[in-house]
Length: 186
Image 1 (cartoon, rainbow, N blue to C red):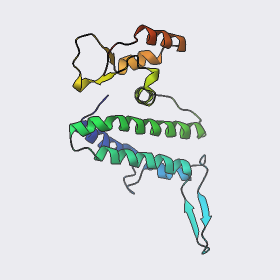
Image 2 (cartoon, rainbow, N blue to C red; image 1 turned 90 degrees about the horizontal axis):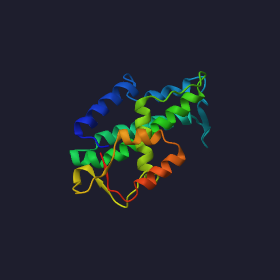
Image 3 (cartoon, one colour; image 1 turned 180 degrees about the vertical axis):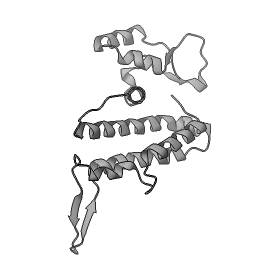
Image 4 (spheres, rainbow, N blue to C red; image 1 turned 90 degrees about the vertical axis):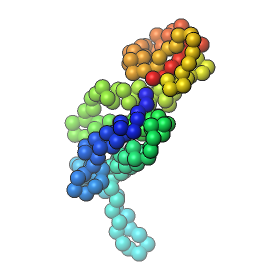
């Protein structure tokens, strides 16, 4: 799964509009330390006797990931760079998804419901983190470099969604059935 410069710009605009405070130009998660379910602020006393207060770790972790995603979305100057950074972007989005899931579970309501975008990010991040759980070939060819005469297995959102629905023994059987075929990541 790759993105181009227009996608990166759209994602950055959406990120700034939804996850940043418009008044303070900081991630909204920085306000989590005021929430009743957080672990509160950390108060430290320096050797000089000065008191320093820091955000709750959960809020700072989430803010750090949001900020790193924004910087990542600002980096590419070409579509080639976007293709190269797409995997890193998906992995950072998965880290953010995990932090938000954990924070939601700690809230008084204690609910987290995975939406379809969450599932897409989780599936692709899982594929990128643990390719041996999915890959059946010794070599994978990216879609922009792909030239093969024999049919290939297409790794795309539909493939990963179908894979997600398989039981462990069905996954092992599918890996065996598709062993040593060419794969194309779309």
